Length: 454
Image (cartoon, rainbow, N blue to C red; front, side, top):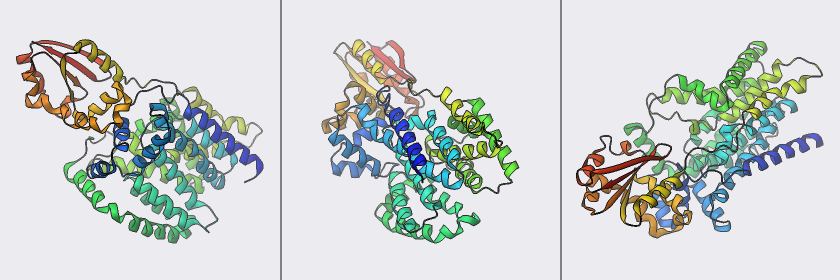
């Protein structure tokens, strides 16, 4: 890599760092973020016991545990590791595209990644997906690089990190194996399968838990439902920021494949990296539903590489080629909304609850796991206090047992998806018999708060 390319790569990483670290505190801790934060702060014995029922391995929880020990316990600081991991992903992506095609393609692929709202969202989550994306892209780079001196060691290290970050790390290893079917990558098989053997041995301490979680998902199903065919296009739309860009990108990929006749390694690798996970997980989801935007995060860098390769392949040889190559990145930039609020405001639920309670009421949450979001919105530091554990997992079931009917005063129910635990909403009918005066407000997106009074 020459001096110009080093400066370009440094600039791309710098731009990503600035963007990914901006607006880190715009959104409150929501969805699965409070879960990650809460369990990362638990005593070791409690945390390890939790993994027996958790769908994610321990590595990212440990990263947040260590990180929060040295930094302020605030949403923005807790998201900083994800922002850093997302920013660093352009490093292996640049090297990969540069080796497979050229510098122009490398810059374009990195810009497509940088201005993706999809990737920006994961950079602002206290979850493992940004780290998982970095590890996947780095593994792809190590697989294809020409210098194989450290390939086996590099692949083994990254593979172990992948499977201890997310169980879908095994799908990434399968994807790497499928790439070695390409004639020009067959020489990498020995390194990859040696690394896979090392990974299997390293994963043995966790294999029983993994087998239990996998068996439960296959036999009992997941919380997801089978997707409809439209979801394939919707996923490409998410990767492209806007529908018009999704159509243009898909058209460019098709045109480039026809023109090139799939002779380019970059095109074939990009097609496998993008569409094998996309279509494969879609089809599997009719047996075991796993088709979800965040579960496909490891395929998204492949889409950026594929689009960049296709666009450059279609461009004419002219002085304006560099300008034309930048148009897809401009399209994503114009639809890039890093400052956008996600519309989830659990603090509004807390504010309304405080107003309605006036210091004298009983409060329950459905489903029970929304307690963690409620705690984070009330006081994020409560996620560090072991004394709050009983609130997080014990209080949220009294509506279903009739316990709140015995309360003499006001009863507050926060409904963040009660139908998931009580499809018939029996709690509502039961409470209304003893507390006939009912007020309800959608305090934030899909979160209702009910006040029952006698």
